[in-house]
Image (cartoon, rainbow, N blue to C red; front, side):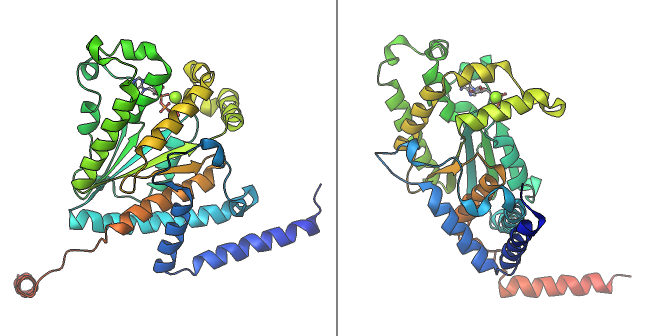
Length: 324
Ligand code: ATP
Ligand code: MG
């Protein structure tokens, strides 16, 4: 067991790290976020292999350093709030953030924490479940198209059209229930879908809708731990679904499907971020960094008021002040 004496330097180190973070300027925070985002970004990699990506991440944000990760996240959240305000005011760009992951990888928690400072008026979260009978009567992008963010807004997809090359690929029975003309169901269907998705995202980019894709990369061991917690803790029971344990049996097939889709759809304009997700506080800092990086490339600024408009504002001010 660690003695009290041994614990002191750790605490001091954490305090020092927090102090070092808290003096960073806005510019330094952005460049820190960009550096972190770059570390986990995949833009094009024909040999992409998940085995080369850690599920743990940087030891700088180890469990002992939880307060450091929390401080870094808090700063990221503040920055995001400020950037979103400008995005909304400027009303030109839109941002779509897609979350994909194995069960219990922490999508919900990441969305909740990273977006905690965001103005709800400028943001919409959509969770995509198994399609309804109305949805299945349409092409698979239909339900997602309806939820794309307007200009000035952030759209969050909790799962997305990528399920069409994940769960549908792993369980071909689902494909059979999709009512597609038989002629179109060939062995090329997955490549066709991946190409269509890539082209769709390129179309969005050409329209000023930036797409950022987050894959929360959790290990099988950590997933098991989280499932057991969901069973053992009363306040987490509601999160547990028997189907999650069934899907776990297809772990390898899912990992292969993820590799394929990242290989085909990671591009300069719509990158994937392979985020180490075994330690949640760290994963959230990386997610915030990826979003900050995307917003920063938009060169956001409040619309400039021209001299005539300024003069008009002054005139209106005088009118208001003159009111009895
Ligand atoms: P958690 O991580 O907390 O379990 P979740 O995103 O898995 O959250 P659930 O309600 O448990 O939410 O599951 C939604 C289910 O819907 C997933 O199993 C997913 O694979 C499935 N789904 C989503 N899109 C499709 C689709 N197009 N076709 C078939 N199934 C889909
Ligand atoms: Mg689930």
